[in-house]
Length: 96
Image (cartoon, rainbow, N blue to C red; front, side, top):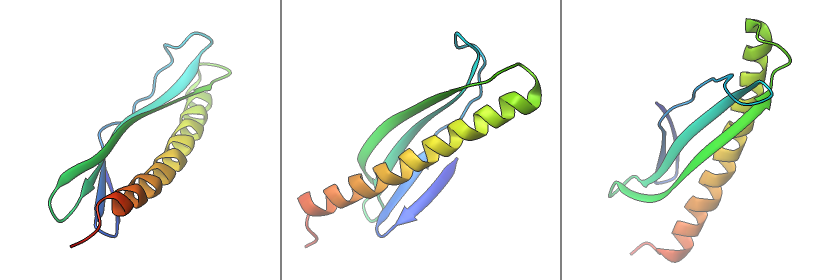
């Protein structure tokens, strides 16, 4: 389980998996992510990220490269989502 912190927020990512079961042969990264407000452990937001990238063949190096690309995209998407969701929570739930 990966964890990232920002200010008073914590994200948890449930899983990442590789699969070649998609039509056209692809590697997929699928994560369920929750953003928690650390002081009270309240879930601020949750989102499932899925990215499938094509693999030219079934050899390990090719699938691993496609999976790496998919994970990179998901990681980028999670980082942006965390920043947007955390900022939105801060705007709509001012500190007392």
